[in-house]
Amino acid sequence: YKYMHKKYRTDKHRGIMIETEGEHPKGIEMDGKMMNSHFLDGSLVNMEGKEVDESRREMIRILKDLKQKHPEKDLDQLVEMANYYALSHQQKSRAFYRIQATRMMTGAGNILKKHAAEQAKRSVSLHEVQSDEPEEFVSKIFFDPCSYQCLENCGAVILTV
Image (cartoon, rainbow, N blue to C red):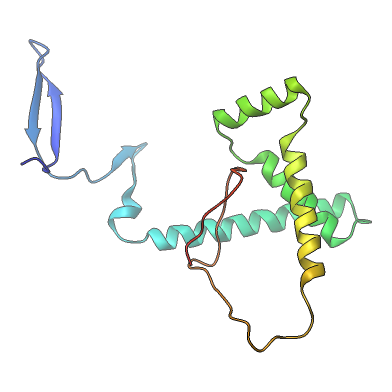
């Protein structure tokens, strides 16, 4: 009884809350479409794949636009500019805006520019560290799923292998 799904409604005449037992909700209907219905039919993996494909297409579109605007830049600079563009145009939380406003008032600067610069430095240092010779006793680790997205700069991300 404790774990059964319950619905609550108010009595029309007295305003009393009435508890009824029922089945799990099928989903939330908004504008004639069922929201959260992808969780019920088991196609959540397909939705994630579609989101990854959509983000790749968006990044390709951004790179093409930047290449047309800046034909003299090389690919690394264009990728850095595309990352900054994607960071600045993605949806952000209220906490991000509060932190950004505090940083701007204290003179700490724009966190997005600093984050983009850090990413560029990391990618350059990773390219320098990698050697051309394949090593025999190196184990390779792969992640499942093969791509992860961190939507805000949280400092560190824990990934399971």
